Image 1 (tube, rainbow, N blue to C red):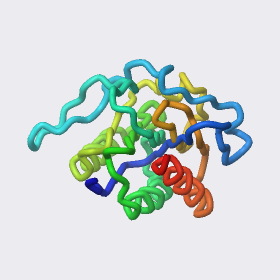
Image 2 (cartoon, one colour):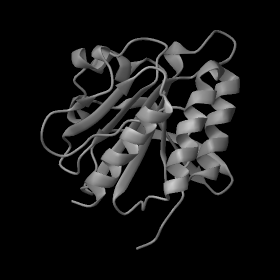
Image 3 (cartoon, rainbow, N blue to C red):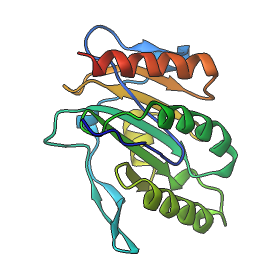
Length: 191
């Protein structure tokens, strides 16, 4: 089994198989993420073609039955520090891409005016350094609107291989919440 270090820009989402969704705070009780409810996200996923990066339409559908770590975040530098802390914890674990699909969605509808080009450059740099991560640019806030996520907030969820949400967290993420997320990922990968 090949181990690949997973690196992502600014947002994570994971879910656990079976049972009820573990909720990190009360605000999560109003959010019901479902991958199948997401349509096409435009301009979409960043794809590397040699040294160039292009966009292609992205959908949540995947024929491979994998656990999904889904990270949604506003395309703002103010959230970068907390996302980097989570990213570094995930990288340290070296999860196999054979069993864990990592999707990061940068919400450019939440970006501050005048900063979108800087955020786009950051996104491209992260895709180049992490080709196995699905890095998605969402210009219209489609994910936030479909799932009724709060604006300007990090949202992380874990989905089982069958697509069932098993963990979610909204807002700043503490060390103990990162530990809880990693426990859920490890639990799912051993099923």
